[in-house]
Length: 213
Image (cartoon, rainbow, N blue to C red; front, side, top):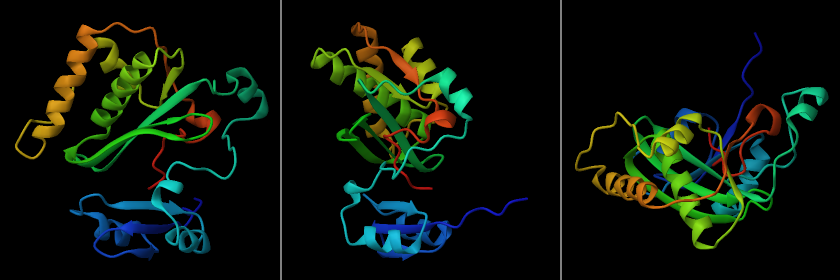
C-alpha cells in the first residue's frame, strides 16, 4: 500500500501562525479561531514562501493541470467550459466552521466569499454557494454556467430546499437565516443558468477549492 504523500500547512491566521508539518498540528491552530486562514502545500519551501504572502493569493490556485484519467477518457469528457463560474465550500468538522466562495473558472478571480460560519456543514455551504452564484449571474444578466462538485447541493437546488439534518440553534442562527433567504430566492425567482457537475477526476480540484486538507 502506497504511503500518503506528506503535506505542509501554512497558517496565516490562527492561534499560532507559521508552517506546520501535520494536519493535526494545523487543526490545533485553527479550531475555535474566527476567520482562520490556512492551506496545504506539497513542499516545506512552498509553504514557507506562501507564509510571506497573502492568503487570498493562494487559495484555490494550482500550478498545473492534472487529470487522473487517460487521454482517451479525458477526450470523451472534454475540457471545462471557461464561460462559467465555479463554487465550493470548506468545513473544518461536520458540523464545524464553514465558508463558501465563487470564482471565475478561467482566471480564478474571487467573485464572492461568505463566512466563516461557526456551525455549518459542507453540504449547506455548497448549496448556499450555488444559490449565491445564481443570484449574482441573474443580477448581471449573465449567460455563464455554474460548476459545483456537489451532487447533493445540485439536488437541493433543484428541489428548492436545503435538506440538511443539522438542527437550528443559537450558534448557527445567522447561517439558517441565510438558508431561509436562499430557499426563498429559489421559490420566488426563475433562472436560465445551467448548473453542471465539475468532473474532479478529469479536471482536478474545482477552481473555487480552498486547497486545505
